[in-house]
Image 1: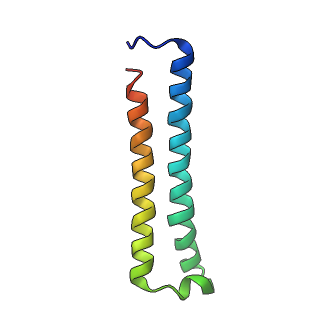
Image 2: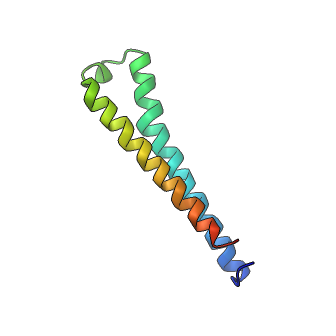
Length: 79
């Protein structure tokens, strides 16, 4: 067990939760929303080129994965 006091443990948990929520938001805003717009044939998504859409989706996915990884890394302090 680490030598952190209870306040530091809770702060670490809060940080990890905030990072994980941010990763969920990245996924929702950058991946789920554009895919839903494409599926439901919204005009703004039809004007984007396929390569731009793929590049955007990959960028948002990498952002979400990075934030989730940082959250997991923050929690390792507690082990």
